[in-house]
Image (cartoon, rainbow, N blue to C red):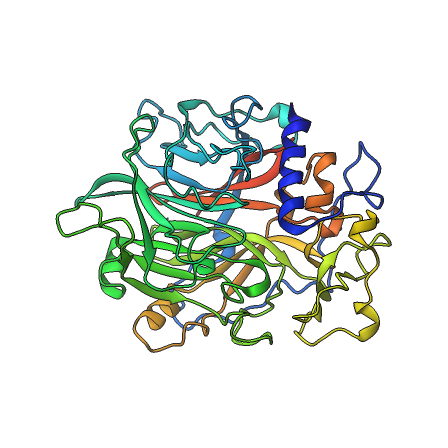
Length: 487
C-alpha cells in the first residue's frame, strides 16, 4: 500500500510537470545518499544585524527531538504524503500533564487531481508525546488521535486540487470563538478563485465558512502558510488584523522570497463575510514578482528560483523578544536551473532545452549561465531523464530564516518598501533531519545534496515556547514532527 500511495503522488507530479519516469541516475535501492555536511563554500549567513536589536537569536532554539504520526497508510485518511498544513491548539488534550501541552491539527494525504483522490487534505487532531532525541524511528514516541480524519473542506475549494497548497491557524478570538482559519491554493493557480476560509475545531461538525480573497493580491502570494500574530502587535501595526498568510511559489511567480499579509476575516458581530468577499489586507512582506521582472531584483538576499518556504511562525520569548521565522528547503548551489537533475552529479546542470520564454539557468548571483550549460542532457519523451522536471539547484539545505518584526512594522506603516526587509539570521537544521525518503519517490524529491521538499508546515506553542516542524517523507511517506524549545 505504501508504494501505491507513492506511485499515485508521482503520477500527479508527472501530469503537472511533464516529468520523465526513468530513474537511471538514482542511487542503488536500499541506501539513501545523504547530503554532504555543510561546507565552507555554502554561505548560511546571508544576514545583516537588525536595527531594533529586540529579536530572538537562533541560539535560543534548542532541539528537543522528534516524534512519529499515528495511523494507517490507507488514503485519504493517512498522514502519508501529507503535512501541507499544521496548527497548534493551546487547550487541546486537556488531560495531558507533561511538558508538551495542547494538541496539533495536521493535514493528511494531499488531494490528487482528475478524480484519483478527490477527498484528500483531510484534517485530524493529534496529541503531542514527549519527543525523543534519536534518528531511529522505532525509538520515537508516536502521537495519538484525539479526533480522526475528517473532510472539513468538503464542498469548498473544488477547483483547487492539482498539487494543493494549504495553511492553517488556530485562533480563539472573543469575536468569533475558537476557529481554525485555512488558506488553500494549488500549484498552477487558476484566476479569480478564492483562497481563505475558516472551520470549527469540532472536526465532525466543521461548519466551514468562506471562501474569501485577500484583497486583489496575486493568488501565488497568499495561500501556502498561516499563523497568528500577537494581538498587541496586530493592534499597533495592522489595525487589529491578527492572522498572517502568505506563500512562496517556486520560480518567483508569487515573489522572489517569502510573502506575508495580515488580515481579519470577520464582521463586527463576529459573523463570516459573504462568499467571494475581498478582505482588507495589510502587506508585511512582498518581493518582486517574476511576472513583473525577468531579473533577480528586489528579492530576498540569496534568493534562487527553486527556494521552498513551506512553514512559518511568529516566535516570542518571555523577555518580549520576537522573530518571524520561515522554514523551508533553501537552494544554495552555485547555479540553479529549470529542467532536471544531471545523471553525472550535482555539479552538472541539465536544463529543459525546449523552454525559451525565460532564462533556464542562472548563477547564484542571478547572472545568466554560460551558453554551454543550457544545452540540456536528456529528452523526456525518450524517458532518458533521471528526475522529474522542475526547478533544481546544485545544493539544497533545510533552514530557518529569521526576520525582525520591526521591519514588518515599518512596511505596514509605509516607512519601508515591502521588498526591503531581509533575514537577519539563518539556522541550518539538516543535522536533525532523517532525510530517509522512500526509494520510489527519488525522481520527484532528488537525493543527496539535491534532495528537495525536506520541510513542511510549522506551528508554535507561544505559551510554552515550543516550535513544531514537519519533516516531509521521513517515515516512508509520512512526515515526522521535530520539536525545538525557545529558551
